Length: 434
Ligand SMILES: [Zn+2]
Ligand SMILES: [Zn+2]
Image 1 (cartoon, helix red, strand yellow):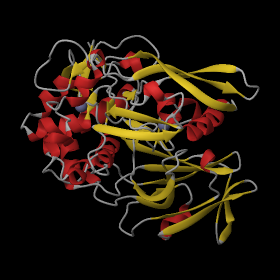
Image 2 (cartoon, protein in one colour):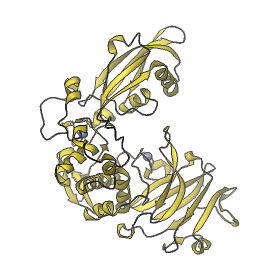
Image 3 (cartoon, helix red, strand yellow):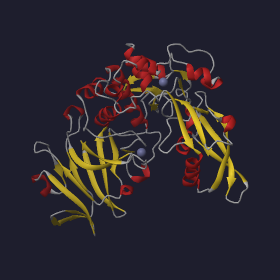
Image 4 (cartoon, helix red, strand yellow):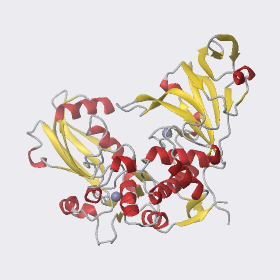
């Protein structure tokens, strides 16, 4: 029986510059040796063009006679063998961290095809790229240059499965499959591509995990905290048979982390415990991580004033005080599914507001984005009188599927990528699409 997947193509379309970025001018440049094709022949004799929004579509700066109502295209080879660091079309200012307080502009180098068009008065750039090339680039963005090869191989297979399953399909109505940001998978083209990650893509080419002859929806996050979370704790919908709670450790002990948070907080046998990384260059292996190690076990204080600000920002409610926080339901890893804020509204009446979903909770209890929703309120007894809440928590991210730090812990224990994948996605089978 053939293996099915959500993406019915060997090409994936990545949104790079989006209308919501409100960009009206970009410069695209490339080296002389690049094999370039374009639907505007004049471009082929240069190494750089600046594209602007014109009255009728896109215009080329300094050559205003060249205007196009239809997308302007740029194309270069994108088979994984043609890639190298900074290969492709260079764009200086692409948005990263879209919508978050750390949003910034970064430079990217993109292989494959670029379509530059006008939408709602702003530029839109879509990069259509060979899935294998895309996966190599994503694995690079997720990992550091010193990542052990089994960790890179595991991350590469997982990124490939996520891309092919396309289960979230957040952007299909916008005319592309995925965006370039953490909303989907972080993709910065070949800018930081290493030989190491390129080799991982070539050596695992076409390898995917399947369940019932379908490419699996391979979720992953930075650090589960010691127990991998169930899919249905974090997202709406039915249970997913291979995204289930399990101890991120050599042995599966009975019970769940949620049953006794304090003993879970003290648990340090997990593959992702910071104990394992005391003498390891984490930043070198996992890319940009908080090297203080505080994501495995953390504490964070937030003033009630700041929670009230977030309440207004995300719900529009204006309250005078927060008097209680009632945690209603947790998943197996102790991640909170929903809670109630109890407070006093502008008219002096008692009010309640449900904060729903792991994502919503992480937004509400942080100025940036809380590490995870697996926390207890340390000052729960006195929270009515205190002007702040102290959160004591575990893990970084939603905790479902592969735990990147746990996979690093396993790779450092010389566990091969096939067994790493088997651990995080039980009941699945590793196979090759070719
Ligand atoms: Zn997205
Ligand atoms: Zn873990």
